[in-house]
Image (cartoon, rainbow, N blue to C red; front, side, top):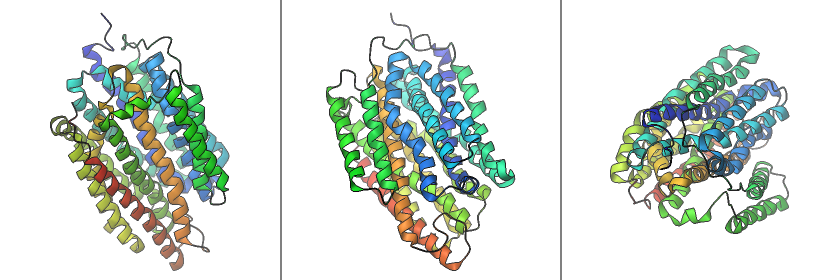
Length: 468
């Protein structure tokens, strides 16, 4: 008989290892957004370079996370997961000592490679450790505890940036170190059934085409002066990627996965919702610090309700998804996010952070609390027992590509809405013209995000099949 992935008594320990690793990813995303104004000032980075500091990470994750999932299936989920943690921590140290925007962009790319190996493994380990009947609840606990453990991350990051002086933003990357070491310690020696599938090849050609296509897409969306041929080359590369995956002997993206309606629609919901979430949460700190007189520590008040509400609500939402299906919860939660971001658009010109922004980001957090666990469980529903890594990789890739496109595209839209003259969007200023232009720029971001969240709500209604 095949050896179990882990002993029944070790399931909760594996769950905690996955939670700690996921926390690093959550902390990195939120803290980097909070620290971006200070990083831009210290490194002398332009708006385009700030976008690339974010894009380098998302580019590496989104183009390689499918390979990370496939490598986990091939070489062992826990082994690749552990390697990803080591690379991620090394990238964090490189970020802490970066002296130029180019060095920071390179370090963020290294972190993205680590995350591409680590992130799909965290979800796949939970799926493999628990039987199907208990998987929805376990993934709900994973989502809830991961969020709760990261709730203090943005607060600590804001404290470092606000009170740490010139090196404050560098200290935030140290938050990943204890989490990474603890996750490595927990997982070691507890997965005797993690043997992988020897002889299965990893699709490096597909990884290269995906990296090229997504990278060119990011260039075309970020740089308003990029020639049309860059966008055409991006489309050609992505088309070549899909064509190759259809004939590759060992594709990193098995196109047959999308024959499952639940998995296909869930990934569309993921794209629309994470486009909205990443766009607002990347540009909100930049707006608040540069124009509304809010400190980096105070900005965390817009992040903390989201973290806490997702954490509190994910476990019960996962149980409800197991019983009634993921679609209704995903639709209701996405609709609340759309409503919250529409309110941010309406009140953006006022610049009232405490009166308007914090309450409506809390409403978005309530909506996300209804969505996250059902979305996670539905994304894994169509995968066979040997393909959890691939299904997890697909869903994570979609979320990261959505964030990459959102930051690149919305940055151009915000710069256009800001208009010529003035310090520029995201640059500190206190004139009336700068405040008005910044409000218009962020309003454009929030309104677009609201439309994408509304699209996610409509798509979620197509997910009718219960998550079992």
